[in-house]
Length: 410
Image (cartoon, rainbow, N blue to C red; front, side):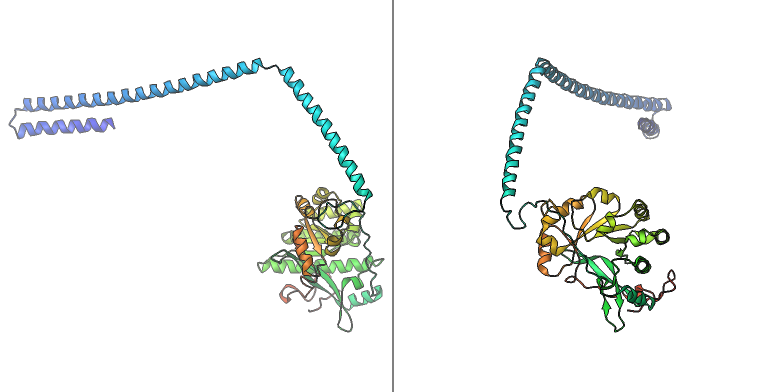
């Protein structure tokens, strides 16, 4: 910047000398002298201006430094006062005082605990009040007996051989909007007269593990087909696939399950295997290893027919459990049979571990209202929607993995 100013002064002095020589008829010596004098005067004025500006900046910096030093001095004085105050404190006396307060507080807490225990003993001796707004007391889990199938095993084998086993879907919705969150794969058996039998009517209870593995294998193929086609169509879905120890405990079937999940990792996250609480709790070490391998492939589990929520939720979350299914009617009627928590708190507690509480068997609107009051927003049941056929564009007529069976059109 200064170089430009000096250049401008030199040009101005040269111009002044030219004007004096040509315009004012100065001699060359006089014109040069006038230009030099003019340039010197301009340089002196410029240097003076720059020096005044530098002095002004220096004075301002000195003032700022003085203020900072004054602030530091004040801070040092305050710090010294605090140090002196701390040095004057008798720490032993203060500690003794705190210990005395803690001792008194511990005595009060013990007295309160004894009083609460006496009140609880008296409450247990008296009749417990009814209603869902009290704190829920512990109770043994209910005994839920599944009905025996009405269709004999041989007729079931025959129906499978005749390709009369089909899979429908039943939505699982979120409240209050009732938007589908996922779909249960529901096996159904088409009878010779054209009627459809539900799984409770034909699913084997005792024996028939080979048939059960066959049914679950068909369901796995069906789930893969639906999930892949839904994902290709830009609408990925979540499917709950039935599973039991009959498949997990068989080396060939479980190996095929792992291979299938490995080959379909892109959709594995949308596959949740629904397994009963009895089977889940009864898994052997080998079966548990298979379940862990399935979780590593991206799949998850939904434990059905849960009779008690007095469980290690954190452990189940680590094992890949994503939802726990309870019977809505039984939970509403006897919440104390499921948990020691208040009915309105249990869903939030389980949700802390990324596990959802799913109420099944919804039969009326009143149950939905009561479940919403308790914070349970994932539901399923005949009042919501009954099982129905899968869209035709999401199923195939035959399966490559199970060539001996063909899909029935529905």
